[in-house]
Length: 308
Ligand code: GLV
Image (tube, rainbow, N blue to C red; front, side):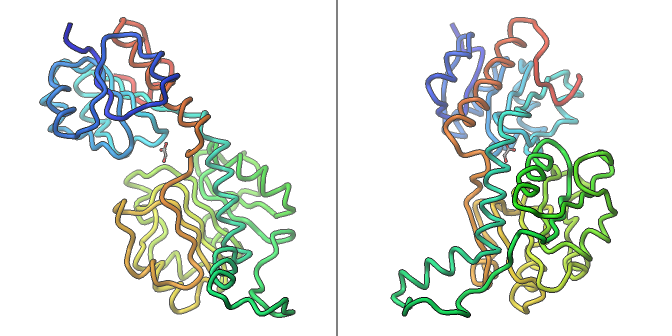
């Protein structure tokens, strides 16, 4: 029987048990695109571009189930117009992503990579009173941009560190932290962390002017989507010392990293690891497979992003 579902990635075995319709796992993009032509379900990742051309070619598709919470790689409008469900994985990656955000905040504020490089480079000549002094989180102000699930989970962790939390999210004015407008948040926060989805409204939300409006010596952390930040402007602000540091997990043109970010001082760079725990990745794939199965069987999905 021809596969009803095409899976573009090798999922944890436990998760694949939840895909209960005939399926094929095919990780080669040219191959899975060809196979998608006759499939009813496409189970994909955030690195798979699902554009209008693919949707036009895959005329039998009923559901795109992406094992990610972000859907900016999918042309949701085109899918909706074709009556195709777009399903994603909210909730299950919240804790893992919030943990990684704190890892970046701590690494950037306490200069962890610099300290390790100094030691491995043979430059540790004993304890020094003035060596690699960083920002202490207790009493510092954390500005959270985007108070969805991940923003809230970061807020509770930050509170445990004794940080004062400010929030800016026009869609969630009642979240934890003191709600302020984005201008005030940038002006007063010692650390700004981004947790908004990438949409036309948030693309380059942190442009040159916004980055310049941040408190001198502040730290910018991004575990959301790279394109929320103008990377060239961020690199400039790090090179000229306007910002003390940055912690980045995401990039506008992944896997490429802006070359001037690679050479900027005090920037901690991770390769998009926000949800990278086995527990979370298994849960994400499971959610995608459950919804793919449901839609192919004629049931409504549990985690739809759109409503075709
Ligand atoms: C990760 O970036 C996701 O959107 O799941």
